[in-house]
Each structure stands twice: as structure tokens, then as C-alpha cells.
Length: 451
Image 1 (cartoon, rainbow, N blue to C red):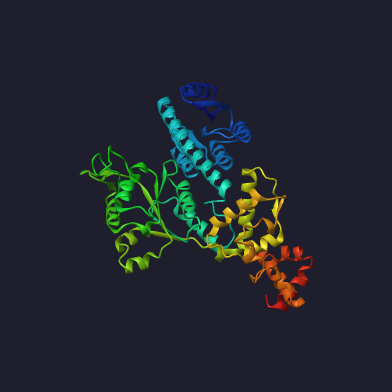
Image 2 (cartoon, rainbow, N blue to C red; image 1 turned 45 degrees about the horizontal axis):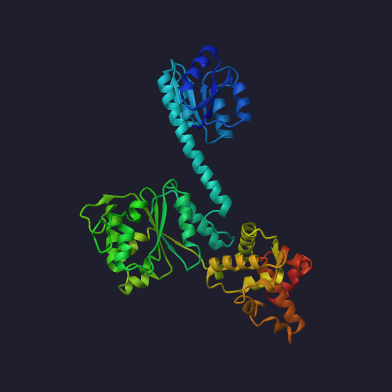
């Protein structure tokens, strides 16, 4: 078992030694400090899971140790040791961030119990922060890379709802990253240590989907040769993500609503229900309101699912993010396939920016992987573009590179500036640098061409 670092601070040599001996039975490594000043030096040297400090000490007291510990290491727990009659000050220490206070004479069993609780709280906090760091480092949060205001609002929404237990409905076209968002909500929430279980409801027959969701008992139907738990039971304590929920058969919708209301599931062919604790996240690319009006989706289930609704914007509505996403995917796949690919040239980037992306981010990701795999140099060019993209997006007019023929110099210049602005997501400083002109000249051209 890993031993956690603990700092023990007390100016009474005898008591300090006694307390250190009492903590030897716990999974800790104890560092001692004979004064508050020495404690501050120790806190500057390393991080501690728990700090145990006497309240009243000369020069630097326990409150100062507490403040420094929380400033340097917010995840650490602080236990304050107080003398008789110091309860009011101890309460102040609790307000300032102390986890516990223990009155003298110290009950060693109480000390060990409270330190054990502190260690458990510290472990959970560290695991949570590490998880958040991994998510943020890998994805920038939620796997959604972008700077468009629509994406910023989406990420804010994820951060707000992740710590709650609310049911979430994700709306968006295929390929916009609904499962990625669902995973981020799970990973950033309180159920991160539980399972994330995904089920695509599209194309599953009524009998099949009910067995998948609720499980079945032996003999419930032909082929049920043994008992089997469903996705709800498997996800107990975690999150269940139902994709394409709009395709769920009506009879199954009735049973799903019952599970959500009762928080219990009955296996197909069984008579008794089993309690389940599952957070549900549903997703669809269908217009559920219209399905409700047409009698294809139950209204009561629809309103039960949309406690919180997040809309994922299609890529064509945030074309300024194409450059950012393309660069992100380029780095990912260059590492994955061990390819020495560094960047995308301007003409290829223009083609990517002006493509409509009916498959959204998923299509862009696949396109960049294809380009990296087939790259003949360290810079991706128009020649590396998938054929369905290059002919239709070689220019902003969608006419192929021959659009230059018969155009006036003014038309060519206007389109060149417009494309460059789009490729730089409207960053005029970068656009001017790419065009080889001053910012002042670019501003004048923008006004002149009405861009």
C-alpha cells in the first residue's frame, strides 16, 4: 500500500514524538517540525496529504501553518490540535479550511481515525484532479476542440451539468461528437469511478433492445439459455448513454420511462425488480418534438429525458474551427502512424475550410487521418485531399482552380483576401502576415471590397 506524506507540527518535543509513534500504524510517512517557522520551510519543499499542527506556537502559529498549507497545496487536509479553552479559535480554523480539530489531551485513537478519513478524502481528490487533468490534456475538455462561441457555450454547459445527477439530452447531427460529450460529462462528474456504458438504439428490434437494456432470465425467450444482466444493471453506479434514442420502439419507451421513474429494472421474463442507480444521457439526431407530434415518440419520456438539453453545432456552422481541428488531428495521427507530417499548406487548408462537412467532425477527423497516411512529404497539400473534398472545394466559389480564368484582378484579389481571412478564423494580424501586406493595407482592402 502506498504511504502518504504527513507533516506533524508541534513545539512540544515529547508530544510530537508520541503523536509520530501513534501514526506509525497508518500508511503514512511522517515528517516532523518543531516550530511553525520550520513547518513553513517543509511546506515549501514538498506536498503533503495531511498536515497536523498545534494551534498555539511562538512566532508562527497553527493558523499561519494552515493558511500556508492551503495556499500551496489546496488538496491537503489540515488537522488542528488545540488546548483547553481554545475552541473559539479552533472554530475559526475550521472556517479557514481546517478539516478537523482535536482538543488536548489528545486521544490517539481519535487522531488515527481522523487522519485516516483525511487520507481517504485526499486520495479521492487527487484521483478526481488527475482524471480532470487527463481529460483536459487529451481533449481540451470533452474532446471538443474549437474556439467558436457555440463551442465555448457547449463546454460551459458541460462543466455546469457534469457535477449534477441530472438526465441529459444531447441534440446534434451525426458526427458532431455526442458520445464524446457524454463521456466528458461522466468523466468530469461524481460517477467517474463508475462505468460508462453506451448503447446505440438504432436498428435494434423491440425484443433485442429490451434484453440489452433490462437483461433477461433463462427461458424468457428462445435462445435465452442463461440469465443475463442488461445495460442498466451493468452501469449501476455509473452512466448509461443511449444514442439514437429517437429510434427506440414505443413499447420499449414505456418500459424505459418506468425504469427512470422507479429507479429499478425488471429483467425480461422476471417478476421482481432490482434497484439501479444510473445517470442517463440520451442523444439523437432526430427532431423529437416532431416525433412526439407524429405519435412516434412518447411525450412523457421526451420531457423526462430533456431535464437538461445540450445542442452540438454542426461543423459547417463553425467553419472557423476547421483549421484548429485539422491541426489537432494532424498532430494526433502523425504520432499514431509515425509520419513526419508537420503542417497543411494554404491551398489545402482553404479547401478544407470551404467544404460543407456533411459528416461533421467525424468526417474531418477521418479525412485528416487519410491525408496523413497518404502524405508524400512533411506538408499536406491539395494532392493529399480525399477526392470528394478537393474538386468541390478547391476555391471558395466551388468551381475548381480554373475559376481564375476570365476573372478581373480585383475579383481575384478580393477572393484571395476573403479566403485568407476564413483560413485564419478572422485573425487580421495573421491574415496580413500570410498575404504579405501590412495590417493597415488589409483593413483598407476589407473596407474597399466590403468584406
